[in-house]
Image (cartoon, rainbow, N blue to C red):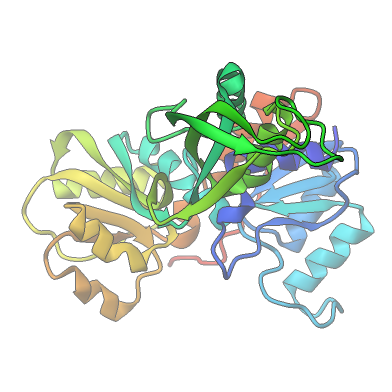
Length: 364
């Protein structure tokens, strides 16, 4: 089992194409072809984590937060980042980070958080845009089903809770091959008319190369004609934060205490209680203050996230409760997502949860 095998499994769930522009997800240290002896899962990478990996014979660390976030001009061991990098390289330890790509993924960070507090009817709070494409191609009637199924198997045609979605129109295609052609139908030098099916279906941007490859391999023509269009539709299954409903309404204080226990919070910073019961809940792991308006528009009774600044608490304007549970606290369960991916796909190496609490914030 190589690092590349594991990276491929993770990126099937959380494609790096969807990470935020400021982010640095992916394999940051190491060799894709290195054989894996064991994996250590953590939220952050610090020197103690590298030492723990060595002790447990893990030569791959998977973390949520990137150890290299900004550009480095020198690596001299002057801070925890440089020390971690040096120690990892010395011990031939690879480091993979899946940050905002896992945040926006379907069944990623925020879906996992929602399930922790038993939310139902879960929907994305802030869907991503400009991530969907449409492919249009023209296939002889005899091969239309084969090509359509190949596109579906490559990941095209998924809309919300539906798959195998396409639209097909019958028409007549024309072409004429030159002396170098090897046409599937028709004769060289003569214009040929062929009854064809126009097939159109959508796909997410990270599958573009796979979709084209599948089309070319399944299409009978020597030179298949196809068009690809970028769509402005939102991708309703992917994005930042989620919103869902509780099975039964809960008193505000009761629900806040449930959050505190579930996320093992030393404290929760929150706006004033509004004297109404909690039914609809918005949640975003990590720094989610920019999604406050989305939470209000969605009709949330409470918005659970982290890293609100003092003046931002005023922006709730008594429309909902802001519950700031802490950055680490809201992302601590990312390790469980990685664990589920790895144990589902592989069984021939050890996967360990780090026993080190990397939260740099303490409460008195």
